[in-house]
Length: 260
Image (cartoon, rainbow, N blue to C red; front, top):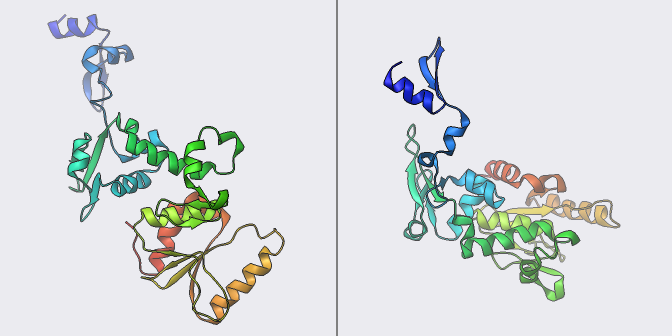
């Protein structure tokens, strides 16, 4: 037996044959436990998708949060590392086939206090009103509840009065889209929108539980105002909330805004 074959055999490896790949050595899974293959958390680097899995966000949401914190910036395409991000252990990479830049992060980054505080607030939004989660997210929920607990303060400072509105506001802010909340419509009467995007002259309304008393009537009345005055309206329903990353970019693109 050749020396290299003896070495492979002593560690559990064995020669295998493949019509496509020829002869190669197959190794048992236990070989991955060898110290040569062990990597400390500090050495493990995660892309945005992998980091997002650890912090409960999508890859897009993860990058937008890191952008908001000033740890990355937008490139012509992709994402570029800032000096602050580099100080936190971020590493600039690029896809070999396209050259588009992206950043990988230490697996220890979720433990960063600043990131943890922002994540706590973001995830508190998701659990507002769920009694089983109150203790876990109590501090963050107290942070965003204002007006005697009836209002919810978003990351951008807007005060909203429903979890759905807060989620939409948060999405617009993290996407760097200038928006007003509770803006009065430019018509006779005290009609106010959920959100207004001045760059598009576009109004956004969230329609909630139409089964509640008076909700359907109020919705139809308000829709008639938009139609009568020729105001552009984007409507969002309860089924859209869980997929804002899909619904809003597609809808906004139809109005001339490409969301990064």
